[in-house]
Figure 1 (cartoon, rainbow, N blue to C red):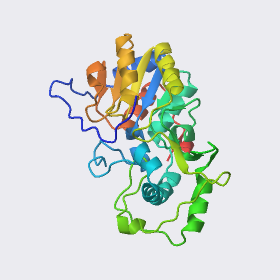
Figure 2: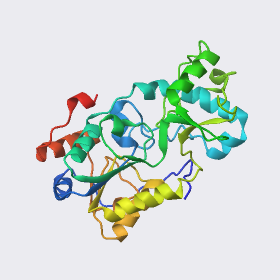
Figure 3: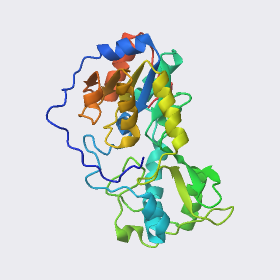
Figure 4: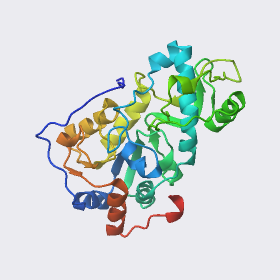
Amino acid sequence: MRMRPTLNWTPPEDLPPGTTDLGSVVDALSAGRVLVLSGAGISTQSGIPDYRGEGGSLSRHTPMTYQDFTSSAQARRRYWARSHLGWRTFARARPNAGHGAVAAFGRHGLLSGVITQNVDGLHQGAGSEGVVELHRSLGRVVCLACRALSPRGELARRLEEANPGFAPVAAGMNPDGDADLTHDQVGDFRVVPCTICGGVLKPDVVFFGEAVPPRRVEHCRGLVRAAASLLVLGSSLTVMSGLRFVRQAAQAGIPVLIVNRDPTRGDIHALTRIALPLSTALTAVADCLGIAVDDEAVA
């Protein structure tokens, strides 16, 4: 299944309304074996914007596609200039109370797993273990020729050396780490090659138009089959990469619970949608369960 760069989904009028009652989430976690599926909405409080929520960037930003990146040197120059600037924001981001609550639920044995559509690494930063990064991570870089992996910080250092003084003011920043820059601001930004083979470097993330590896998808499907319930956190479920697991759970009779302020494409399959900010909802659930969120692990 391939992700698309723009999916202008409009919620139908007959979607079930959201609620502020957290009882179903408390009950599900009390029963255990909850599989978490998280999206960009859980990271907004950490300073990483959402595409489709309040203040979302989808209307002004078309994410880089795999086809454009691999076929055009100019597209790669534009991407790396924008991403190099955006990485500074990503590198400073710290987990928030929502990430901390998920980690706490895991430590207390209430979760069967965590799948995230995010590429920011904040679940792991808060202490969650065994997180499945559906779209991989911006913290790594892969060579498209020799497939060698390297840390993003190392590439950032090389790009700084190749582009001294590069510090344009971006109009905004997007959930994929892509800062909004004009053509003139990108200018003659220099892209650096793989240090091993001289090949093209790409962030180790699944771009729009690129397939999530089948083995990873099947692993996630297995997690869904083993779960007692599926808890969706901060995802509009507009793209199929996450929605397919909601549909799978619903078809198998596994309860789906969604915490998202706005309607989602998965609401029709859900037992309930809690229309509250993620950190507020999850810390309230943790309080109900008598679980402390590690303040030192979050911003």
